[in-house]
Image 1 (cartoon, rainbow over the protein chains, first blue to last red):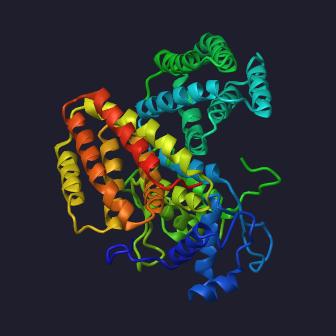
Image 2 (cartoon, rainbow over the protein chains, first blue to last red; image 1 turned 90 degrees about the vertical axis):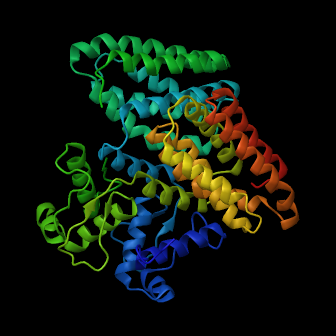
Image 3 (tube, rainbow over the protein chains, first blue to last red; image 1 turned 90 degrees about the horizontal axis):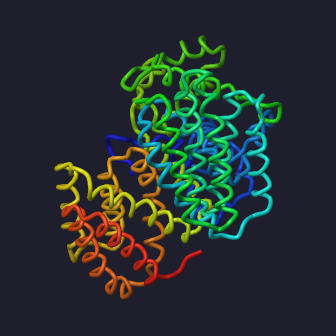
Length: 238
Length: 238
């Protein structure tokens, strides 16, 4: 809500107008927005301000603009909630605003809930196949530590998505880089990692087995224990 | 990660550099970023691209730029995770990507968890006073329906923040407008509202009393029942 202390900026007018158009169904996913010149005329603002608004929507994952196409091409509305959330939360994580303990606590809440729901749900065959691929890739002994952390974070986000809740999936996506970051930073040495990685593999297998067996309690407990165990074994970060 | 299919845009280079500087402590909250010209020289990009990057950081709530100050003034790094998350999620909500049932389910998970934690925690006197003010304001019979919804959403976010988890608070902030939106859209008429509002007041009082009495089970149950009851009484939205 603009007040005298926080005057509305011209690009915010475009953001708000596009938000209202999306909400009321005048614009929908897949539609092309009017070009820069048309939007500038519509809102009585400069083309530079329109360009700012479009780039912000781009970073937020609301529209996609084709690189190299002219300013008249128009941005296409896409459905990509996680992209915007992810980059925002990643930036905020970089400001060290969220203590690792809070991320760990949030993960335990959301992921154990999601594992229980996932165990009770019908399973998407494509997602299950992808989860098995991720587990197989993490079994490789030649995989680097950072590559493991990346696959590990992907496994956790994808597993949570089996719960079938789009808001929870977006929240997990938004935490993905934060999780990968603290996990990576928690490991002091290759020696430490060598001791930890076999246990992570076993725990991932147990979580997956419980979900496949439709064992909600087992899946929630295995997931919670997995997160708590890793955190207890590694360097405590602020 | 830039690939040939998703070429890096010049403003993204600035975003990434600032993210890295924040992460490594070279820039911290309260610091002023270099001016436009300096950043442009540093990253070998145009001043227009620097301006785009700064405006994106502004919308994300990472920096605050003074309106009307010259381009050389430099943006100040602020700590405002919820602003960026809120506007992103609000925009995505507008694309109708999240079904109301998923928002309701997510609220029950997060808010009942937070109420239980809040009941077990030491209470911030300032927040408690604000919560009591919100409850008193919602008792007014002359308050309009939309004003009630706004105070109601604020009450739920603030109550959750008593759990003391910064990630959960940011997530609740990000859901605030989505919650306010579906609650408002669920009410068909003033007659319907007149029947609902006294029950909401009673339920809010019960939740607050359980938290104050450090009754974790009672607070979690009262909160969950409150969300489920409202959803069951009102128009079912897609």
